[in-house]
Image 1 (cartoon, rainbow, N blue to C red):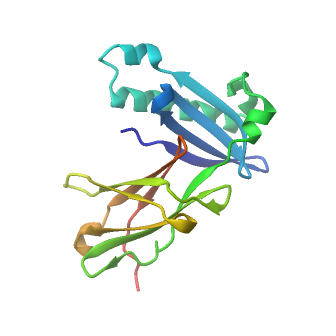
Image 2: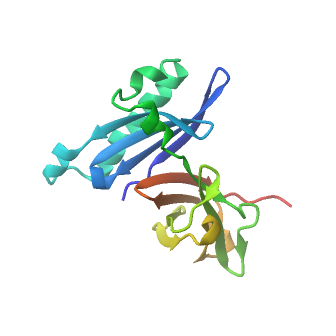
Amino acid sequence: MIFGFNTDIKHQDTIYHVQSEARENELLLQTQIFVRGRCIGKRATSYADQAAGTSFTDQQKEQVLRDQHRLVLDAIRDGRVDEVFDKRDTPESLAAIKELDVQWLNAGSVHSDRHLRLQLRVTEAGAGVEGARLTVRFARPDAVPFYSQALTGAGGDAEMKIDVEESALADSAILVQASYSGRAATRKFQLRKVEA
């Protein structure tokens, strides 16, 4: 499984949200660029030819996706974002794309009773999404990553619990991927102790 990349980047007075993901069913590595929740352009790389062979690994796919994500970020920084867009998209097809987002609702208080508790919400264009699949990767130093999945309920909310001692949370990271209707959004959260 490949997790995507999400970056907010500002150029002049505009904040761009860049979202890259692997679209496995279409054999595409896709980057979408949003401004105020509206898709303004996309860039996609097909890996259908490589997938026909057996040697194109998830790590290689992730590196191609990472490079494409960086290319778009560099183009935005340089003020030439229009140059990296695929030209086959119409304004109408772009207007139909809604941004998928993941929020961590209880980020200020996550550990109790020997559990890491995640209250998450998936939204599309600001509204909660029911039936989104959440995949969580909990990574900590000197331990094998732990994976868990859940589906969002009404309002786009889901709760997950992971058995873990509070002392193990230091320097840990949580990667959350939401998948819905063929699209995905990924967020990385770094855990750190809050001083009282």
